[in-house]
Length: 262
Image (cartoon, rainbow, N blue to C red; front, side, top):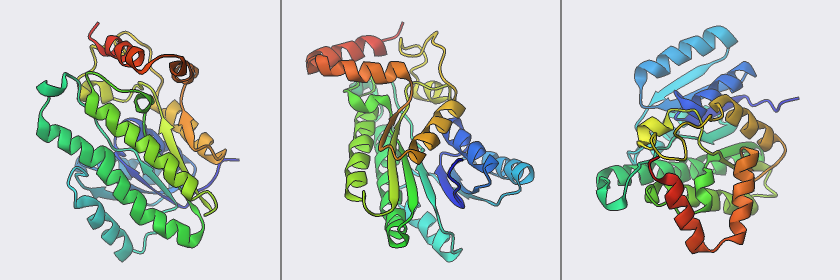
């Protein structure tokens, strides 16, 4: 039987893997706090999920690239006495291209979203979970976390941070009653490719990608099993294992070839 959460907070909840998490959890009867930038999508999704699954949905329109956004969200939740049983740090984006060709302001926003917002949400909600001796956190990393990423240097580095950060705190919290897991999907049919600009790269062009729903289901099942790192897809797990037998130079040259436009 699937684990039941009373209330889950999901960032980046209106598209891709975040949307899949929202729909799966709503179907299981979990109330939702959904954070995203698109106000229209948030409210349309709220109406749809509340009507279909008879749950409560709180929508919060925030841009998490703003360093102050997380503190404002936590203050709102405290005023409304919202208890979060499951935190899913899903929001994130990537940029494709040579490092010197990419916009610095956009890269800073990426770091603020992929790393800073995730760390802040984790810090502020984990403390409450530890006091209750219950709760769960899923931080969405990526298979990109396991190697350097030429042509997406900052994105790959940000996901390496998420993976290592999550593993470290999971070990610290191993006796706390709180489950903490890093989800590491590969390329997923989620809209990420078009936003990041990597749609023409060999990694994704012409490939049949797994659905966001499959990835989200895999994540929730892995969390239930107590996994700390959940790598989606046999091929992804195999490739990460085989990297151990290559030099760092070989790995980065391999990724460069895979990332190049086809």
